[in-house]
Length: 314
Image (cartoon, rainbow, N blue to C red; front, side, top):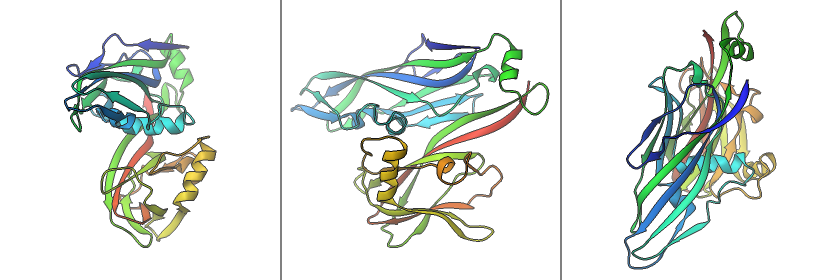
């Protein structure tokens, strides 16, 4: 086995929204170098935050075999995760870009998909797709855009080497865990006491979730007092309860962050609930729920980092 970095010749653009990913290795991570041209149709200069620029990437999807989703995230979702995973050294959400009245400005930034290995060499198909949001509001539009895709992967010289590296319980079998990272949104009211508002997804192993809270204006906001994990059956048990401010302070320590962006905190099931992650492959929907105590109404964007364990006979 040897490690390889490969920048794909094909590039995602406003016109080319899907490209095939080579299937000759095990992909460790995917780097996305975006270049976006902003146009200002207004009569005055505009200052656009990097967070708003990221909204141009409405969704990035990495899908294998036609319907197996490994990633389905907005540009902002990816950037939020990158802040945590790079100890705050990823691109700054608060940096601004000046776009002159009636003019354009080019912006370039890097974001990473780095939640686990995709075993491309045993797939029949692997694609990466983009959905663009070209109207960013306030007379700012996207007039041109591209994303270069760079793979960091393991390449094996023979099938025997690959099987040996990921050998399962039986001869000729491999055991793998692939990422499934996506987001779910749920609105909530002002809640004076802890109230169950969200059912955890089932069918995989939950590693962690980034909880991002928005107020009714759509801005990220610290409007949560506490959150909890509740098991509803066979008996109702509150497994985990934490003060929101404490959770954010712990984020600084656990992820070595100089500061935590407004309106978010990480709930790491692997570190804080059960080693290896919360295994919900055999659980019924509604068995585990997130409860919130909030100071105002708003919306939770739950960015779920899961893994799907599989034993595959080759």
